[in-house]
Image (cartoon, rainbow, N blue to C red; front, top):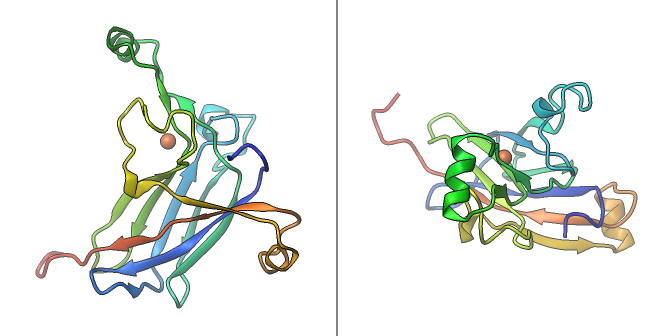
Length: 174
Ligand SMILES: [Fe+2]
C-alpha cells in the first residue's frame, strides 16, 4: 500500500483521558525510516540530518496533520548475537513499516508508541513483537479533486488516520 505514491498525510486527533475531550496544544515528536527502510542516522551523507523527523502541536480541535514519505519495512541488525538467536528461532529480522511517536502534554502521561501499515508483508511477524491491533493505522486513498485541493496536494495520496489518547497523571505526581 505505501509504495504506490510517495506522499501521504497523517492526521487525526489527540484526545484527553476517558472523556475524550479534544486535546489542543499537545506536542507530537515523530520520526520514521525512508521509503528504502533506512533512518537518517543510517545513511549519513545520503539523507540530510534529521530527515523525516519532526515536532508538531495539535490544533484547537485536537487535530494534527503532516505530509510524509511512506516508510518501508526494515531489518534490525542481525550480524551478532541477535542474529544468531533469530536464526535459532527460525525468525526473520524484519520490522513492518511504522512511524514512531512521542506524545507529551503538561499534566498527562507521556505516550511513546508507533503505528503500523496493516498491509505490510511483515505485519504478522514483527521481529520485536511490537504490533498490536490498536496500533494499526487506517488508510484511505484520496483521489477526488476537491479533497486533493483541500489538502494542498498535487495528486492522489494515501490519508493515514490514527487517534491517540493521553491519560492524566495521577494526582500529586510531578
Ligand atoms: Fe523504527
